[in-house]
Length: 154
Image (cartoon, rainbow, N blue to C red; front, side, top):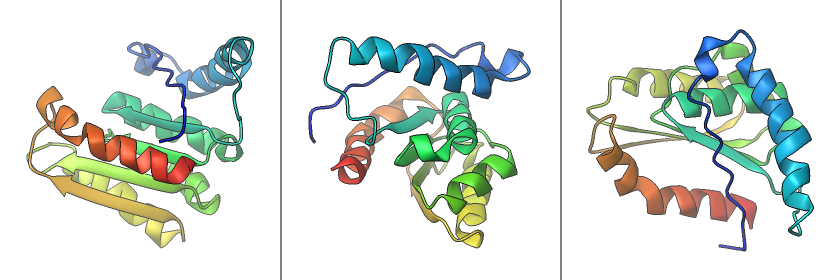
C-alpha cells in the first residue's frame, strides 16, 4: 500500500444531530485536511472514506454529499444510509465495498444498499463472511479492508 494517512474522527454522537453528515464533511475538508496538509504531503485526489456500523452509514452519507471529493467508499457492517446518498455515489461511479458478517442483523441493509448501487449503474461489491456485528468480525476483515483501499488508491 502506498504511504497513507488514516484519519479516524470520533463521530459517536453523529446520529444525534440533524445534519451530521454535512457537519462531518465540512469538518473533514475544511479543518482536518488543511491541518494534515500543513505537516504532510497529501494527494487530495486520493481520498477514501469508510466506516464501521454507524460510521459506515455516515461515510456513505458524507460521500453522497460530495462524491467528487472521494475515490473509494467502504461501508463495513453498515447501518442503512439514505437512498439518495447511495444513488449519488453510484452516479459518480465510485467503487464501494459493503461487507457484513453472516450473523449480523445489518446483513439485509448491506444487501439492499449494494443492490441499489448496482441498479443505479455503480460499482459495488458485497462480501458476506462468517461473523456477527462485533469487533471479532471487524478484526478478521482488517487485511481485506486495507487491501480494498490500497487497490483503489494505487
